[in-house]
Length: 130
Image (cartoon, rainbow, N blue to C red; front, side, top):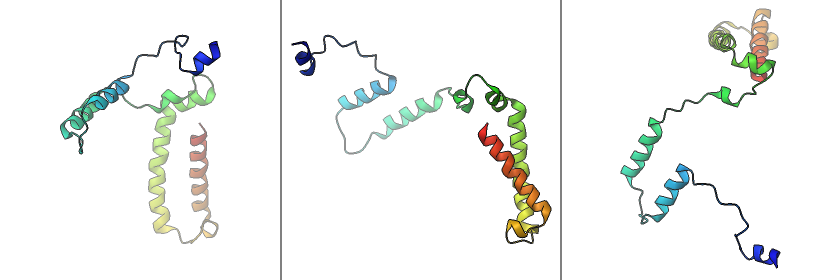
């Protein structure tokens, strides 16, 4: 009956397929072209140029939630600038720590080295959780 026809491949009751995406269209066109041992370098360059000319700019904020305190903090320009400043300070601190820290481990280092390391650890953990 009805179930047997569906199992046999009867597609009359199925919804129409969505139109192919541009990538699927390109793939279908390539499948119809004759196969060569080596890819066509000019075609590859043309596809690469097309992709490079697109005006898409990656922005991680597109993946953030749209409501809540943490997304507000994470999207704020002051938070972004503060994080960049802390990254720069951390780079300078790595230089200072490498050249002037007499301790071989954090526990044997002077207190100000320990405080600075814990500050950077806490800030980057906070930044990561935002």
